[in-house]
Amino acid sequence: MAVMSPAKIRIRPRRGMARLLCALLFLSGASSALCADGPAPLTAILIIGKAGVPDDDFANSVVLVMNNLGAAPVGIVVNRPTRITVRRLFPDVAGLARVSDKVYFGGPVEFGAIWFLMRAATPPEHAVQAFDGVYLSADRALLLELLDRPKPMDGLRIFVGHAGWAPGQLESEIDRGAWTLQRADADTIFNGKSERLWPTPHAPKDSL
Image 1 (cartoon, helix red, strand yellow):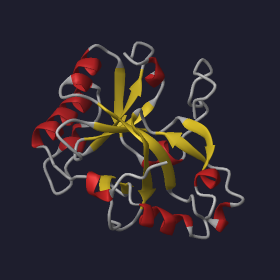
Image 2 (cartoon, helix red, strand yellow):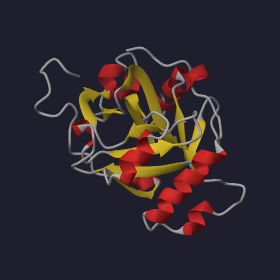
Image 3 (spheres, helix red, strand yellow):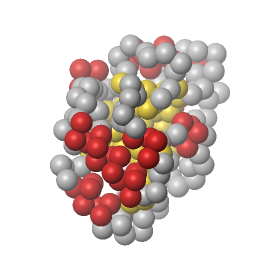
Image 4 (cartoon, rainbow, N blue to C red):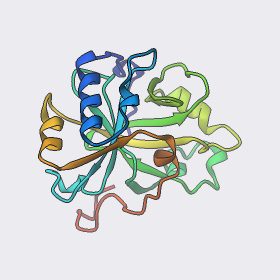
């Protein structure tokens, strides 16, 4: 699988997008304190796909949506494990021999690229902050460094692909009631139950 170049992760803070996320959280009943002006502006939320979401593959999916990677929202599906184990994806990493963690389906965009979310007390190099204490990266060297730890998957989740929307598309889908919103939190990403495998049972047998 191809690994996305770290250069493709671009930090482009968008004040308009930040206001939009705050407005969406307000409409969903989330605390307005999340959107208070200050040194830590809102950069991410979680959205949960309803049965009526335009793409059936996103029904019941939990997506971390970030507004600091480009002109339009970028998302990572966080609750759809594939059948591929991390040790199968990185067979040369000896410490993964007994690791059973799965690689997750991050979304259909750039499906050959590997992304990962990690918990960190201080900002790692070659990573972008998703929200407080959680960072996103596609840097292979950083990922291999994390996998070489005594507990390689501690505070780490690996994805293939990501989700994306055209400008205005996600807002329109939310307005139609296809998604519900909630505050982004690390426990949902790293400790949440993920029982719905990807691909779904009706998908072609040669899918990942």
